[in-house]
Image (tube, rainbow, N blue to C red; front, side):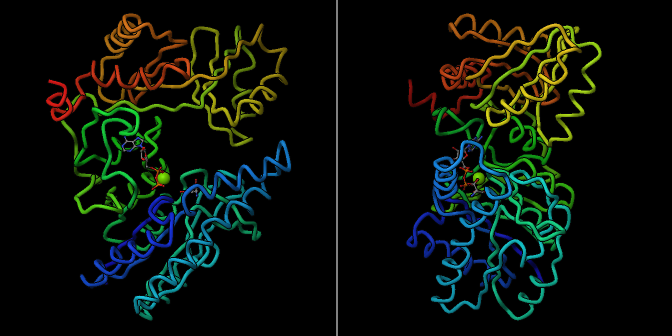
Length: 397
Ligand code: ADP
Ligand code: ASP
Ligand code: MG
């Protein structure tokens, strides 16, 4: 039997009316004879609201309790969506991450899926049921509830699709595909019809928030095609699979708004100690080395913790410089690093955008800019690297 995994994001299940509309996507696949597993996010901004509530009670809420709290959002959606399916006469059952057999490591707030026991899901499918699974959550081997990091429902969907050898994993969202940049910020974007896993991974890892980076890794490992499409309109969306390679040199412009930087000068002896400590605290940083300066590009949410860790090794460097309220912007694609850096530097200079740092990585060229400049920088780089869509250029002429 062929299996399709469908994932509905927060906006797609944001109201009960929207949930009713999502039922038609499930029916469409059932009518084609597929078994269907649906993975859902919390409704609309529920997760943000829960984070805010926690902040009203504690300046530094316990990570275990945060996961206990945040996992409730998805649980509301699974039961409501299942009711909507049942109302349309479809046999269906909701499962939490634990009930769906999703095992994770114990890193609260950013847990990784370590294995999936698919017995329960397969048993429900064999009874002819549609299975609705809570995204973004799992369980550790000692029974603790974990969450997979913001946006992690995509990862639940892709990991289930991989474990069940699904034919496809459809990510229904509020845009109709992957674009050359965030369409909400850069109006001239062009839609990308096909991408390889590696290309999508580069975009997502550098900030294209339409897909959780780990979702792509799971799909790639088991060669499950991912399709990003709109939950509101019909359309082919963007297909992400192994076979498709784009010929264009530059794929897109991605950015991460909430970035800070820590520069550790004359860091000769302490580097490995600091990096080891960060790793053992499961803190993900981008690391750049310029001569004897170790530069850590850090998400705002980790900034204080990284500062604390770096401070412990103050015998091993001469000084530390830090800057908050930055954003990282990246030109993604195959690009000559010297030429690329020079181009970006000149463009920023001409457009009066001050840059804090510029560097190359396997994904392309990245720079740190002031947070207030990042949206403007994205639009400018998009145009200068020839990514503006033909339609948008026609509209201007
Ligand atoms: P969901 O709640 O469905 O998971 P997300 O908000 O996580 O939706 O992801 C969809 C959003 O991703 C879009 O609304 C868009 O603003 C943003 N986005 C960022 N980069 C891109 C891109 N390159 N292509 C498409 N959307 C993007
Ligand atoms: N509800 C979670 C979040 O808002 C997970 C997700 O939507 O994928 O981050
Ligand atoms: Mg998302």
